[in-house]
Length: 131
Picture 1 (cartoon, rainbow, N blue to C red):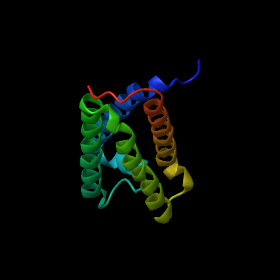
Picture 2: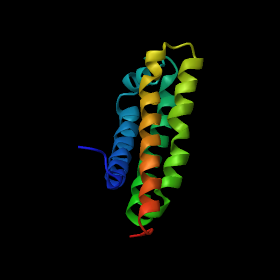
Picture 3: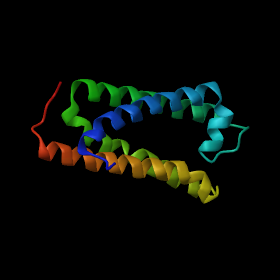
Picture 4: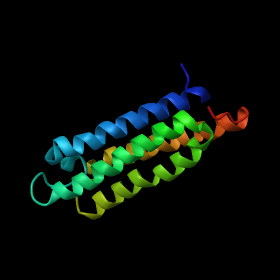
């Protein structure tokens, strides 16, 4: 099986749902979520994780809304959202955490780059359809 151009939209939807779950995870168990961001489990991570959780929830809702109503805007939104995991990885590495702590952010950025490429190629091969 090879990844088709039409896989970008369902995978974008899955990304939106996963962002919602990630945001909720930051609220429900912030100490575990903090470790995923390369932060120590205790201390002052709670408010930072709540802010991060709200960011991820907003991005998930935004991505699902754009996917639902304005599919032609998906490449633009993915390009903007791709900045976040890359900057998250930079913050984690700059904080002195091991590179392994930034791995999830690096993988997320790579995945979004693939989705962006698929979305752009999909739009170039078909007429834009907002539905």
